[in-house]
Image (cartoon, rainbow, N blue to C red; front, side, top):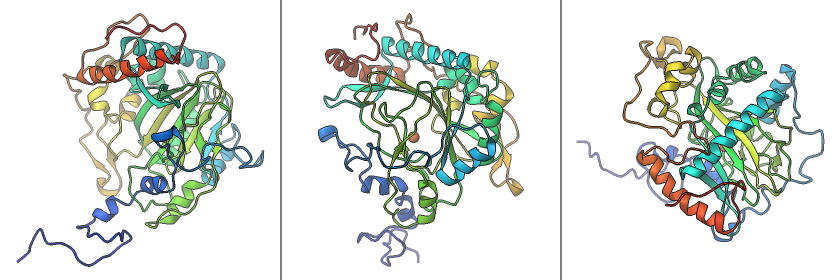
Length: 394
Ligand SMILES: [Fe+2]
């Protein structure tokens, strides 16, 4: 007779901490993210300092010329992606497109702050929020939906970017998240992580996920250009189920505004601390294989008007296309229809500083309460992200 609650007494596998784990639980717990935390790649709440001394200070870690620089040639970009785990696509946005994205992101960010629905991440030594985060970008303006679609309507290097993304992820990849990070002065470095940190080890020698970012400002070491550990993607795959080894040092991505940053989902990275006196803005798109559940639940959150005007390519990229894939349909096996949207969800959508009232969803209300607290602290410390914002009364 089978005892379903019996404990497993025989220790197998790599988790050997004296505890017994039923079935495959030890695999679920064995993630790269746990290893990165064990190695100290995070900021302690007490003291607001990196646990691992200096993981965000990169000067002298690499010689000039050792690392990827912005390129247009696809062969060099492929080389950089496979060797370093990231590449920089030169002039992905034209000057005009860059101005368009800056204006839309700034307006949206100001609107969300003013309406009390903004999200913040990172804080300075006194606990004051410094980095604003916009999510669900596909709902927040045509040019941002175009970015998710990787459309030449708003991105001059769209064809090249689409080609590289498909080579990394395979056919019919979908959008996992679409956000923008506005990193203000005085912030702390983000916990280092990988785009595919949700997937337990072992990782195969290829990524499930891929990052596509558009730099809206020049990225430098001083303003905290994205921290990366070059080559970490292959080291993590090679580690198998073992704890990851000591990794090479970090560097900051440095490139001019308008460049696109592509990162393999296995690359260890994080937001750098901005030591300049100006914002550093980045549009962050992540994509992954179509059989993985998305971080942003577009089936729930996509604005109905955006859905109504979306191209077939954008719908597919958001996951609204039931997918047939893999030999025998084992990766996806739908009927090819487009799923209906939920009626009872309101997204924040496009906002401008003239919008005083946000949508009344539970999500927006709870975010707003959090934000008003943070904004009050920011105001008290004279740390507002722009000079002309007004904080509405609670
Ligand atoms: Fe990230």
